[in-house]
Image 1 (cartoon, helix red, strand yellow):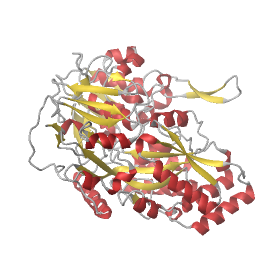
Image 2 (spheres, one colour):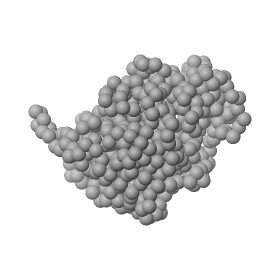
Image 3 (cartoon, one colour):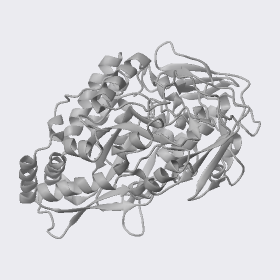
Image 4 (cartoon, one colour):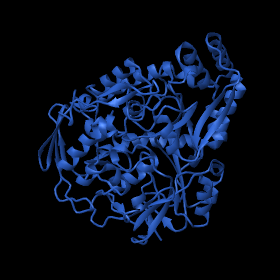
Length: 561
């Protein structure tokens, strides 16, 4: 789940991946370059879209809400640009056995409402996040803490429509393994030794909360009060479907001190207008480019562009509740779909070489990556084999002749062109009807995925929360996990993840995670497509634009001219 990565290891892999793309960062992105100080009080504008939920850290697990939360909060640890975990508000994190941890919280820091950040700020926030009645999307990040099963418990309930749903049924209100020892000390007992458990503590699910957040979460989420390098400009700074305005937190003294006066995230449902606005200097930076610009952005912005590999991937997810993909016929269809996709051609033609065809379910940018996992041959394009597998599936349970396979995608992410290409692969190589199902907002797809109401497949992407193979597996595919929207469940896979978390060494853990991927290649709950790189362009009004190990732009470091 969270195994220590050195900055050297991550950097070597990233350099190798960058060499494969044949592209590099544009002028002005080098962190070592001498840059003008800029105007520290000027607000910059950046591309984004409407977050899915109110901005509670433990309920924000999509990119557009996540980029805001990361700027509003500071946790016990943080990640430097290379992905190395470093202490932030933690004075120390110690354990004699990898199972029992003592965390000392730094004194003297405050939320932007003046309330002091103490050990209680963390303990209360974590208990709130884990309790099933609070329905926080990142609840499962606390699965390793003793007592999680009791506070996260649910039960099945049959509704008036006859459908069974999971409803909260906790048998405890707080995590038994989480103890507030004093104002600056937290003790944590895990269900098993996990020597690298602290690595996850920089993720937003573990952020502290002021007292008002827990008293009225919904109201708080509209105008969150944090302790990070930025704060909401004012009450009502979140103008839904329009923008979110942040300003510098002058009292923040951490490693991400803002070099600008604030960040206003402008909401777009299509990256093309944003690209045009950058060219006209009406928007300062965008990290989502229209697909047709991937061929020209280095020429359009010769000194103001970025292309940088990061710990992320793209997949096509198959809802387990769709009857056509269940049983033996469903298993054959999943394999057929995967082998019908010409990943090499799409990454070259559509993405102009800025993506790398996937060979596993994780990313080359994390330690333990294996490009030869048993079963991964199902990712190789083979139209004849794909058609044969589809025919075998039809012999068991025929695909309806009039059925169109829908591929859901969000138009704000520049996905239409590659979705159309994949749909054409399915039509040409399998002889079925297939087409894209567009949504203006990524949040709309997430809502349907959570409700298990999508009628077909859906595009998905993962931007790592912390640098680990487990983070690409557990949160997405473990039974009941926070981002397991399609409802995949396999006890063998779950057990291998648990064994990996409790392994004595990183190497032993990664071997278990590789074995877990072998199970995934048999089941194919989603279809790995390609590994990600962050492309960005910016206007003449700003400089010092760069992204970190997980592809997120370092908005706090951008300087305004």
